[in-house]
Image 1 (cartoon, helix red, strand yellow):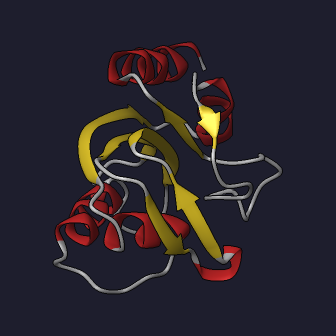
Image 2 (cartoon, one colour; image 1 turned 90 degrees about the vertical axis):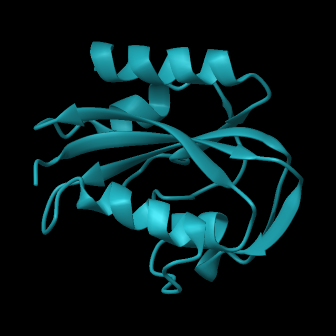
Image 3 (cartoon, one colour; image 1 turned 135 degrees about the vertical axis):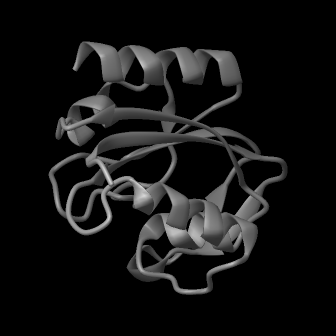
Length: 136
């Protein structure tokens, strides 16, 4: 399967409090979220399929911060933006038009403040993700 960088656009219908691994208990306001990750290594973009399985309740394992968000809330993945063959995860995460919610979320192996942002407006977040992938 191809490799690259992806951004998941997710809707969280109601505010949720979740224990996010080593980050501890975190509060997530209702609204739209964008999470940017890397799909390099075994499986490539199959990682996106894994995220869908966690969100659907078909997979219980919690390895990454996103697993807790998707598996322990009612969050639903609505859109996926992908850039094949380019490792632009940090550039995309930094360019998203959203508000950081949890410092260090998805960024334990880099110097970014977070790879998860929140926005009240879906269209703004989707447009921002598409532009960030295109321009990085």
